[in-house]
Amino acid sequence: KFELLDISWFTACMAAGKPVESEKKHQLIVKASSFVAGTVSQYACQRRTTLNNYNKKFTDAFDILAENYEFRENEVSSLAFMRATSVMKCLPFTVVRMKDLEGLPCMGVRSNLLLYVQEIIEEGESSRVKDVLTDERYQSFKLFISVFGVGLKTSEKWYRMGFRTLEEVRADKTLKLSRMQKPGFLHYEDLVSCVSKGEADAVSLIVNNTVRTFLPDALVTITGGFRRGKKIGHDVDFLITSPGLQEEEEILHKVIDLWEKQGLLLYYDLVPSTFEQAKLPSRKVDAFDHFQKCFLILKLHQQRVDTSSSSTLKESDKAEVKDWKAIRVDLVVSPFEQYAYALLGWTGSRSSNLNNMIFLKAKSEEEIFAHLGLDYIDPWERNA
Ligand code: DCT
Ligand code: MG
Image 1 (cartoon, rainbow, N blue to C red):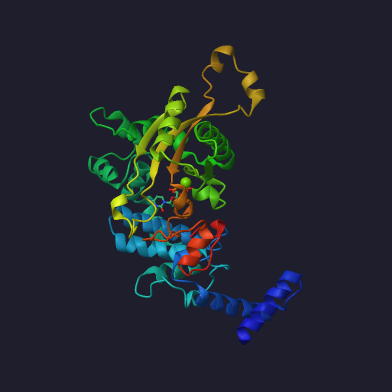
Image 2: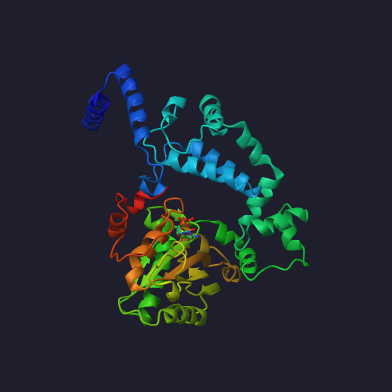
């Protein structure tokens, strides 16, 4: 109780801009952090995680270690580091001493995780992370998976074949690239450069206009990272539904056909719904992944921003200037009754997501949390 009083007094002082004596302030910060640590849920879906990360130094290191374990197929360790990252991202303070971690979930007493934290606190960086960053296998895998359509299996294969750069992969004409990997290489530069909020808005306009041509009362919502307040993303995710949605399968076909005719389609993969009516009424379906969806690469024409430089170009060069960017877009269609579930699932983040959902009637995300007896967490607090 004392602690709670102290902390609220301290917070009030801070809010009012009142000076707090430095020794007192230090003590209170220690108390505040241990108080906060004790309240952190072990469930990511119940932690309020904004994009304001006070522990980037630690989480960046953990992300690299987690990824390295993933590349080496050590899923247990990879998951442990991903969980630790997720927990540290929700802390409203920077960890400066080991004591700050006391009472936090997922900070693995058994594992070597705490040693890394200690080293980062003391040295400012982790020697293990530095080693990983210069590791040949890590570097090659990191590079290979940055190509759209390339996962761990292909990376492993290319690595074993002795490839270390994308140029080497490109140069080998005996390699058979998949239907995804071909556009992956063709539009590599565009796809690795992140999608900005401005570009996402431009895509949003196109998606909205096209979908409404066929479904005037459609609800088109941007989901994924952009709905959580991110300013950049690797793609733009959309959820489409409509109260009168009858022929659910139709809408994506129509949209794709039109974009194809307009020359906007660089790649698409239509995945039918895997929601089996036979499973009703238990309705226990594997998370959110059963809706009909389409993964695509869209040609986004851009307004030329810098007109002064383009006007100095010779006429012959002007034709060379590429005035579009390839953008990864995901479209998901859900039945109207399941819109709230689809929205929750496709907003993410992956770590924040609830698993093994049973579909009860819910009109909104708030209702889903309430059904589950959980506190409601806003989209911008789901960046676990
Ligand atoms: N999702 C999920 N499980 C999957 C696929 C997707 O939970 N197998 C959810 C989580 C986020 C959302 O769908 C969109 O996926 P991404 O675009 O991969 O994630 P993001 O958070 O939007 O990240 P980015 O900003 O990089 O696009
Ligand atoms: Mg996304």
